[in-house]
Image (cartoon, rainbow, N blue to C red):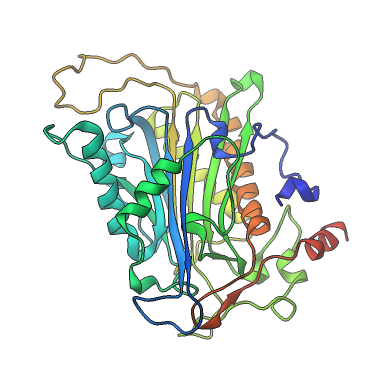
Length: 367
């Protein structure tokens, strides 16, 4: 179930054929989902409710053929590795990994191993992979460190284009969004032909927000479905409602330079705001945008084969507002798709994150 299956049409731009980040040609996404055990938490044993998501930015070898990219931080209580090099050079030089907070290191190391294997062990080579996280410790044995290198390899091997699984899948398995079950969501938009006809695709890992602030297409859904009707899981170490983080990855085939990618990344925060997210003090709201255009950028300044100059194409800023609209709409819809695809899940100590009830949502939206 997705937003448009319920008749919820967000914005004015049209989605791509799959309404997913994979509508940007060459982008592929793979998942490894880990669900094991029930009952009381026993660190190192479970219950396990976690996983890995890997985004492959194009069909080639991104380590050898990087892409222009830019990032933005709405609130920084989170982690996305590799951003300093992206800020410095404006280039994405790795697949993008998503996982839980305490598994960033193992996913990063596995992506380094993947890079070495793709180059050959004898190459002089360095890698600064991009790996982002949100915290799934309410449902998952996060301190048990259950994500292993082979899970990253499985996610890479499973990466595909076309329609994507959403909700309780991959790194989104143990996530909670606005007090309902959250996880992975995706959406896309195509800008009008006059603005180039380009595609913008968004993938979110939604683990953020308060129930009372949730809005869907401008409707105060969180107020209409309070925690007295659908319970909000309580943190075992606090009486506060569940609050967390969101990762947004944006892909486009528009020919953007790094500063323009950074501007696209910034607009993800507006899509989050439209659903009621505010970038709370305890939230890690980190966004990355990349362009699949301008292929052929040299991978390293140390390459013996690097040309002296590289011809580029850049979208005129006269037309970039259409891409901003696309990012805002696709981010908002990706979050809603997360909530609709996710299913009720119980985890450690029997703590349960309940899904947003579709029939009740339809009733609220119609009223």
